[in-house]
Length: 243
Image 1 (spheres, rainbow, N blue to C red):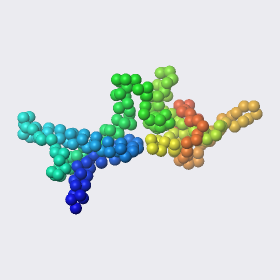
Image 2 (cartoon, helix red, strand yellow; image 1 turned 30 degrees about the vertical axis):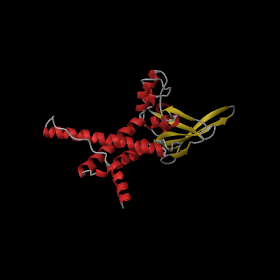
Image 3 (cartoon, rainbow, N blue to C red; image 1 turned 90 degrees about the horizontal axis):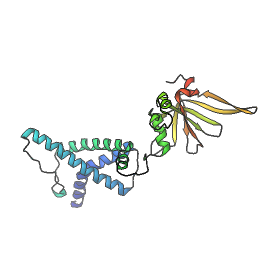
Image 4 (cartoon, rainbow, N blue to C red; image 1 turned 180 degrees about the vertical axis):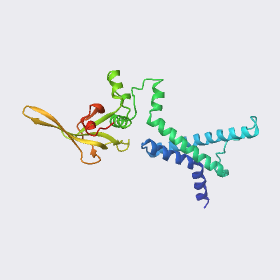
């Protein structure tokens, strides 16, 4: 029974760290091994406690004056006795830190911070496929567009994808469901069209047909090529009057 009591107290001591770690991994769409998970739990637990103590210190100073002080929340498991307000406050802090951490991870804030000191020879932590498709879905392709500035401005960050299934057969459309870091090789295009280059004599003629429905689900793990098309130039977008 004493062993169970110790395990329960230890769990209560870091429960907010576990919540923050779980939410961070869910929001950031990343995966870690067991050792990395433990490190994240410890890191979030410490940050959560320090943040909550700082909030409580500000509250005490506001109520009792700026000379008031507050002892740091004890880390002694044997004497652990969080109040209800501490449990609720630490839970809120855990959720906020998880959101902030996931946002920073998704936007490569840590990589950017490190690159400001030394040349890490990396621009993004995400793989190129996820990076490109997520920017197409977010209408922010202008952030990656390396063409002339005037052309980039006219494109307005809006693009369609043309995903080849064979050399001259492809599906073209807007990636309505963006890929995730954990499963980046499946996309739902809507609106969408069939795109083909058919041989007519000695030349090839482009044939574009709209999909008879909401769109098309495409597996692109083995796609030989994915082209990013300016929406204003896409025949498929013009067929649907997509804006």
